[in-house]
Image (cartoon, rainbow, N blue to C red; front, side, top):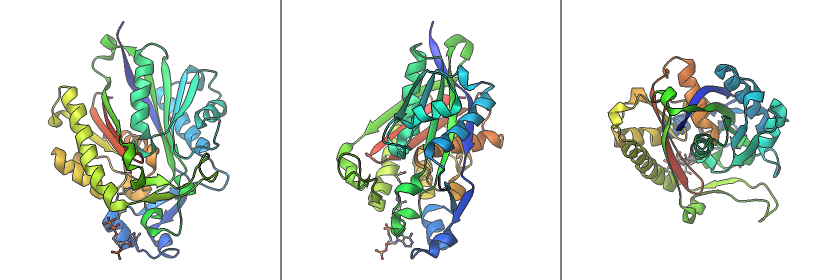
Length: 323
Ligand code: ACO
């Protein structure tokens, strides 16, 4: 029997504390006008002291399970895309499994920075369509605020904390009637590590380190690579850009999103954007935006949705699914 991985539910969680551009302008030499004009960001959420990536992930996962009409015990695979794990080991997915009370299926993390959720969708789809697992929780969760240099105005204004989750289920392809993950495309160019990285780590410095970025170079690469990935998934799936209902991009910068929309000839009213109120939440940004689109009734069952992301590595990719 041929299997397809379909999205059964989604969930989102943002920490209570909000940090506005005005707040930031009191601690670094920046302004609300500069940040909004260059990025589209107005404010972002910041995890409370003692609130970990796994806590954010669990809240998003619980909402996703509820929307799927499932219990944690129905899940036999948990994948967490994160760059900001609670601990060096075990994986955040293992901690989430225990906090959810999800039994003893498989659990692991994926590290592809801002592209993590796209890498996770592509990976989980293969686990489900192979028949190895039946129901997966796929979570993007970050406490990016913990790896920011709060004196570096070029990076600290861009990011925020949050989590989003999907429940994916393996279904008989015939019964899925065209729904499901249709195609994905993943790439990495490790030679470009200097453009965007964290200057610390377990093996190198035994410190956590801080985000370092050559912003304008990343910007140029982002528009180019993301457009290439989107065109590739569209072509390989044998569809046209005009078939796409919703574009759910990684929320890094409004100007990157506009550049990609223009390049692909998409319409701006097809874009689900959460950047102004959330900033860049790395691996969490795609499921957070997707859930916003579902919650306000824009994304409906049967719609064709295109996802994309680029992040440290450099990594980039895109995925296409009928929901
Ligand atoms: N407030 C005020 N001025 C600032 C700030 C700030 N927060 N940050 C930088 N500047 C200054 C710079 O110091 C520079 O000043 P100078 O001309 O006196 O030297 C000036 O603004 C212009 O700096 P640029 O870096 O050239 O500004 P740019 O227009 O490229 O915007 C930005 C910077 C917003 C970071 C942009 O390059 C960008 O969005 N890049 C993409 C990076 C990104 O999104 N990374 C996230 C991870 S990767 C991903 O998710 C795709």
